[in-house]
Image 1 (cartoon, rainbow, N blue to C red):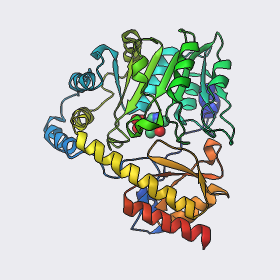
Image 2: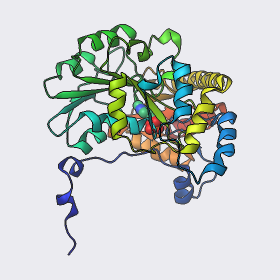
Image 3: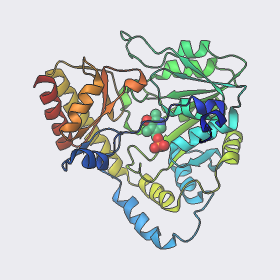
Image 4: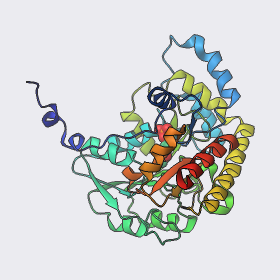
Length: 374
Ligand SMILES: *Cc1c(COP(=O)(O)O)cnc(C)c1O
């Protein structure tokens, strides 16, 4: 008889729900024998990475026998210039997921609590529970709110107590796409005690259009030393496979995050590719333009299909398919289209659809039409 390892696991880990990634294309190819597959399931950039990033990777290949620069000096220099922040405010991560975990490791213990909203990014409960800390889940906005299912900041504020060490806020949020405006987020940051670290996760920040009034939280770093802003190269920069992201914070907070960081957490190819990608303003603009057009294309199609969707300033749309989303997801799979069911996020009637190229969106729309009307 084998030992019951579950009983040996740390209590937080015992009840932890593993992250459910978007279905990889290779898996669908294996399971369904399909070849022409469209993946709109993980909010990746359909244009791929900047050609400058690819060149930088090729040039760095011959150096792979060496350890990467554990301090990420060149990428930090590039980020510091780009963002107008000092190098001492930066923490690099193996994806921004890594940085979220560093925040949990640096500030949480089993005696402490972290707050996040319902329908928020699945990594927040994972990093909280892995430490054995208590997760306090704030009720999200009601469906008839201007930002349906989005973060309710008053509710989050009300959950803060002496044991609270961290608050996770995604702005814009994934999987809903909803966002917090400048006035409300600023008021929240002003109201939170300085002893509570607020992580504002801006994974989709580069997609936000100015008229949306979804703030760049970096502007508040000088005023709120308890603020951590996280960003990633996985989304608009098209480098999800390389794993690189970063945090910007008060230097003392950055020092703590860096203490628990694995010494070589960001690999050498990711370091050079990210620095090169930052330089490619043209690729960034093209990616934003493709997203803007695709968002319109998808919303027009939803209108024709009489489907509602949640407001979104990201590179994805959370669509109300008016029936169990998982069933529609499975039907779309048979037609070679991968989207993301979000029942595990408490949104069983929705599908989260990433914006692709015009042709990819057209494939999705055709398949969706077929499934819903056929
Ligand atoms: C995709 C995403 C991230 C980025 O994860 P990486 O680890 O940087 O790839 C972070 N936060 C949210 C809300 C996301 O949707």
